[in-house]
Image (cartoon, rainbow, N blue to C red; front, side, top):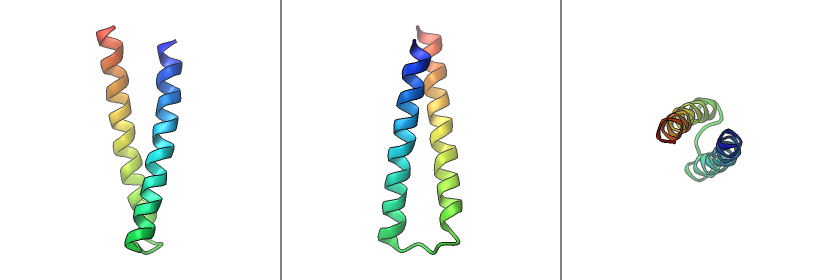
Length: 61
C-alpha cells in the first residue's frame, strides 16, 4: 500500500519538477544543446531524493 502511494507521489513530483525545469530553461533562454544535461542532472538528483525518502519511510514504519 505504501509503495503505491510513494510511486504515485514520485511520478507526480517528477512531472512537476520537469515542468518547472522547462519554465526555467525558457525563461533563462538556455540553449537547446545544454538542456538535456540540465534535465538529466535535475532528474537524477530528484530521483536520489525520492529513493532516500522511500527508504526513510520504510525504516520508520
